[in-house]
Image 1 (cartoon, rainbow, N blue to C red):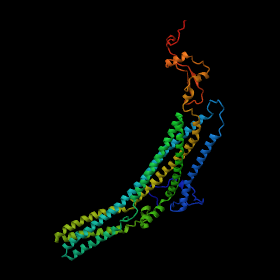
Image 2 (tube, rainbow, N blue to C red):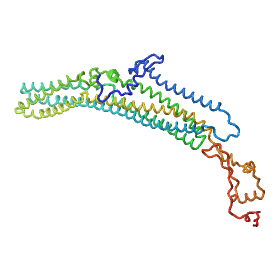
Image 3 (tube, rainbow, N blue to C red):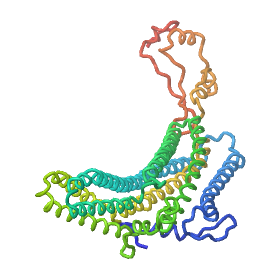
Image 4 (spheres, rainbow, N blue to C red):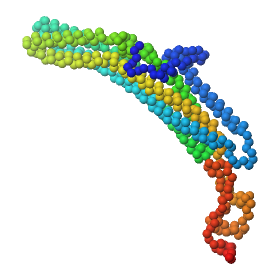
Length: 501
C-alpha cells in the first residue's frame, strides 16, 4: 500500500511494534492493531498491569525499609550527642532525588505539550478534510440547482420562442437532455452526502478528550512540583510537620505516577501497532462506518497509480455533455437570433449559467482528486504517530523518573526527619526555670539582693544565655554565654556599694 506523503513509521514505532505481546494466559498475541479482539485487549491490559506490578513492588520495598528503620535500628548509647553517621548523606540523597523529580517534571511538561500538538494536528487535518467534503457537496448541489433552474425557465422560454422552427426546437430539446444528463452525473459525485460518519464530529470528540487529558496531566505535574518544592522547604527549615504532610502527599503522587505510567505504556504500544500499518485498519473501519464503496476509499487513502479515479467516467461524461450544450447554444445563437430576437435573452442567460457550471465543474475536478484528502490523511498520521507518540514516550519517562524519585524520597525522609532538632529547642535549653542550668553548671545561686535588683532592672542584668543546637548542627551541647554587662557604675545599683580603690 502506498504511504501517505511525508509519513514514514519512525524508529520508535518499529521498536515498540516489535515488542512481544501476550494475553492473560501468557500466550503470544500478534502485533497487528486489532482493538476489537479480546486477545489484543488483554495484551494491552497486561502491559498496563506491569505498572501495577511496579507500584506493588515499590510499596513493599518502602514498607520493608521503613519497618527495618523503625524497629531494627540499634539503640543509641546514653549521653550520645553527635548525629548518627551518614545522616548528611541521607539528607542529600533525598534532595538529589527530589531534584531528579523536578527534572522529570520539566520533561513531563514538554511531553504533554508535544502530545497536545500532535492531537491538534490530527484535529486540524480532520477539519480540513471535512471542509473539502463539504465543498464538494456544496458545489454539486449549487450546480445541480442552477442547471435545473435553467432547464425549467430559460430552455422552456427558448422552446416557446422557437416553436415555429422545428429544427431549432429540436436543438433546444437536445440541450435540455444534455443538461439533465449533466445533472444526473453530477449528483453521483457527492459521495459523502448522507454518510453517518462526520470528520467534524470526530475532530470535536478528539479535541474534547484531549482538552481534559491535557488538563489532567498539567494538574498532576503541578501537584508533583508542589510536593517536591515543599519537601525541599521542609528539609531546609527542618519542619517535621511539613515533612510528614509531604511524605503522605508523595505517597499519593507515587500511586498516580505508576497509574499514569501504565496508561501511557499501553497507549504507546497500541499506537505503535496502529502506526506501523494504518491503511488497513482505517480502510476497514471507514468502510464499515460509512458503507462507501471500497474503490472510493482505496483511491483516497492510497492515492497511487495502481488505483484509478472512481469518478473519472462521470467527470468525462459531464465534460462532454457541457461541451455539447455549449456548441448547441452557439448554433442556436447564430441561426435563431436573426430570425427570433426574443431568443437572445434566454440564450444569454443560458450561456451565463453554462459558464458558471463549467467553473464549478473545474473546481469539482480539483477537489475530487485524491491529492487533497490524501494530504490531510498524511498530516493526521504525522500528528498522531510522530508528535503524539513522542509526547507519550516523554510522559512515560516523566512517570518513571517521578516514581523513582518519590520512592527514594519516601525512604530517605524518615531518616532525615530523625535528625531534626526538637520542635522548640530554646524551651529545652533555657526553659522556664533559669536557675536550674546555672546550678547544674556549678554556679553560685543569686543572693536575694541580686534577685531584687534583677527584678527592678530586668534589662540591665539578664540571666546567662545558653546557645542551643543550630539549624545544621543537631546534637551539639548547649554552651554557656556571658550575660551582657551594663556600663553603669556599681554605686548606682540599689543595695550596692562602691568599692574604694
